[in-house]
Length: 360
Image (cartoon, rainbow, N blue to C red; front, side, top):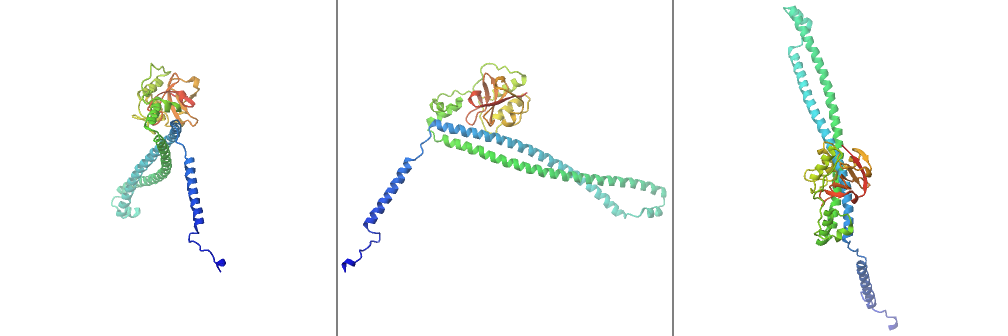
């Protein structure tokens, strides 16, 4: 009987099972722990952070120029819409006055009873006077018919203006949507750059900012430059600048007066600028109207080669033509670099050269 007795089973499967399960759980937890610690991503070095931040700022500048273009188009569409709306309002007011005048004439005719002219002639005591009045009435009728024609013509113009206004309004809303999209893109890039910079220690951040202020585009310098080395190029331009034309001299003079002012994306002065906002303002001071963006400014004059550069030329950078500066000679330019870096003098070699344009 004992040989056929089944062993008692523990509710937890017995000690051997419990031991195996415990070891398996410990092993899995240990493996997860070691796997997590063994594959943790290392913190980026200051040089790597700077490289990533530089890339984000470059992408933000691309988005900034797209924002500037969308804003220019939105402003143009808004101005056109406002002109059409105002003209439609003026025409509508004129139309309403003409309608009121016609209505008054019609009401007067209704009150007079509108007797047949033959009956009026038969009843009048002075036929000559009647005929004179009839001639006047006929002329008045001609004028009334002309007025009616004018009203119809004005009504057609008002309808056309309103249709054009609706078209401009749709165009404006499209540009405004693009404006919001590019604004979001700029802000997201700048936020990402700030997040990366927040990973640096206070000393590393100070060194990075010193390198930016000094115009350094070398990753090693960003981590090695001492915090006290703030050789900001926003100081002065040494020596006179010989410009080929009076207008070029005026543009350069204006740009020199802006040295040290902050970079603010989308800004056109007078207290802050982005890159194309600075060049536009400089040449505006010289009496030359430039378009708003780098993409359009490069086509605003005659293209010149790098070997032909003269003070006052616009110099462009990066393959996407996303940055512009004002050439001042000697391989130097005045430009608004990016957030955190004020308007300053810098060598044109510090960025990939893309082309140049001569205006004025």
